[in-house]
Every structure is written in C-alpha cells, then in structure tokens.
Image (tube, rainbow, N blue to C red; front, side, top):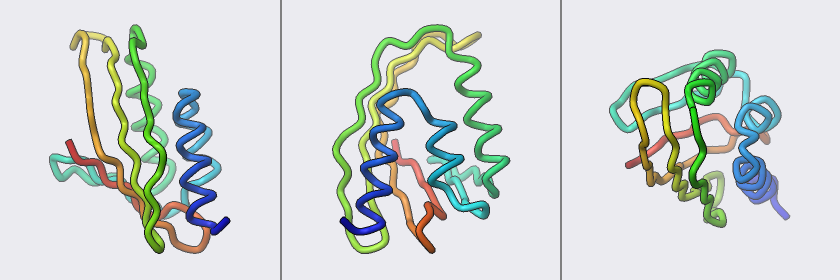
Length: 115
C-alpha cells in the first residue's frame, strides 16, 4: 500500500470515529494549509487544529456522519463527508462536502473543502 493510500484510509477511519484532532496531529504536516470553500485560508498545523477544536466544541448534538471510501491519484486523495450536526447559536446544519488532500513527504500538506 502506498503512503498516500495508507494516509487516505487512516484519515477516513479516524474521521468516522469523530477523531478529527487525532487525525490532524498524526497525519498532517506542521506547515499544512486548510482552504475553506469561501476562500478562507488557515496555515500551520496548530492553527488548523485550533479551528477544528472550536468547531467540535460548538457541536451540541451529532445526528449523522458518513465518510466515503477514499479516491487516490498520485499525491492526492479525496473523501466525501456528509455531516448533520446541531451547533450552538446556529441550530441544525447539514454539510455535504468534497474534501481534497495533497500529500507531501508522507504527511498531508493541504486540505481543501468544496460544498
């Protein structure tokens, strides 16, 4: 199994278990970049992890989480994520997104979300 394929399947499994911070801390490069659909960019693993933790801390109730099997091509892979959660001061929200990852030096260097 290639490094990219191993990373893809490990990320998918950790996400299915709601272990997003663990996935980031073990699979992401220190200089990773996160790009949101609206163009917002978060740079560096500590900043990405802080943003994720803030999101997770604001979830009041988890209704659904589905993560597809990865699609792998060279140094890239993609996952479909379907999430239905209730968020503090926002309410119930469903998100169906395509998550695209770039791997460099055995770690995820970039993630970009489309929805």
